[in-house]
Image 1 (cartoon, rainbow, N blue to C red):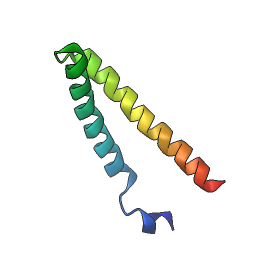
Image 2: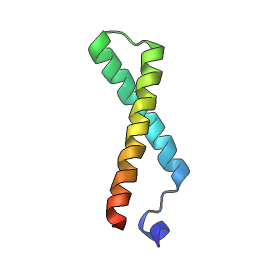
Image 3: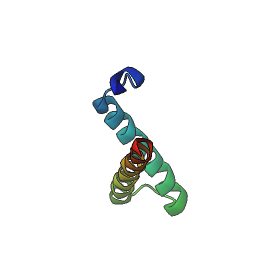
Length: 65
C-alpha cells in the first residue's frame, strides 16, 4: 500500500537528498565562511542528509502510533 501512495523508490529519494544536501551545504558554507571549503561542504552535507532521514523516521513513527 505504501508503494501506491509514494511512487518514488528509495534510491531516487536518496539521490535527490544527496544532491539537495550538497547544494545547500555549498550555499550555507559560502554564506558563513565566504568561500567553499570542501571539508566543510562534505561534513555539512552529511549532517543535512542525516537530519533529513532522522526527521523522516520521527514523522513515520508518529504516523504509526
